[in-house]
Length: 296
Ligand code: R5P
Image (cartoon, rainbow, N blue to C red; front, side, top):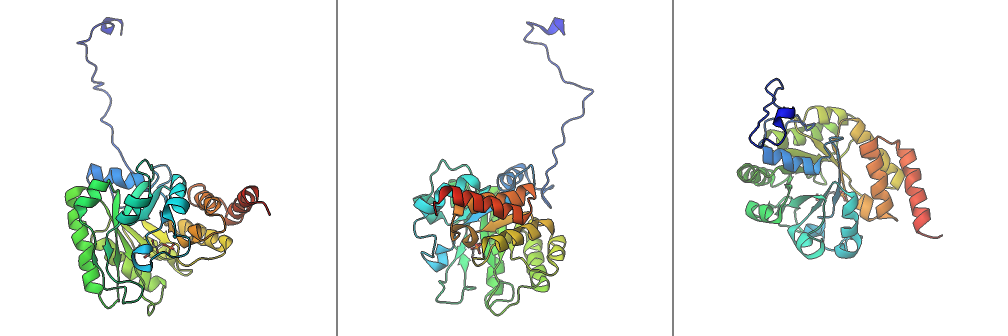
């Protein structure tokens, strides 16, 4: 090597060493373009292949629901514990600091409020704005079996087409109407349809029976939605069961921001999702953190 010293023109191509091959731990992503894989890696931790996503997009149809009255005060500070946040562009631009490091999943469908049929949605943002905001993915509700099923599928496929142009992945959300049963048969149907129509990520509810079949039958990462507020131990147990059944993490809202201690709950969920901590032990972490911070 001595003859290379001080010789700026010398080159070393390591001809004996094969070119690097980069493989990612993301289901179904191997053939995606670099930019799309890079964005997915900002949502799914490359170390674990999982995500703890903090959802606070509820206001787009529910208004200021409990826990989301002041996103700037109560929610934005939690983002540092999230792999990604999921919200509307309105909430983001008004209430979340641009210096936030978490990945960003932007709600891109909307229309009806809780006063009307929720399946009556349209796409509600242009992909160009998602790119301008620097989104890592856009999210769209898909109402399989709902009154406006076909339009919601059209919303999905339009965003998928635009997402391929821009390199932005799409998260398809199984929106289960009140009249439908959240069992493995329905969730398996909905998640598979969403993935086959091009979504790179799917979010769905957990079901006690057969969730592993739902995950196995979906060729892209399945992220568990939180659902209504449960006692913390129950929510942690559900998250643990979901990742043990193969889910690529969770996207939780009410079970975090309606918790007695949202920050402690974020940390407990992280322990379950990324470190496979037993839910009872994670609940103990939650309890200890809560007691430390909130005097009795
Ligand atoms: C609902 O339409 C939104 O997609 C929410 O982000 C999603 O339901 C997750 O929030 P939660 O855990 O409160 O159900």
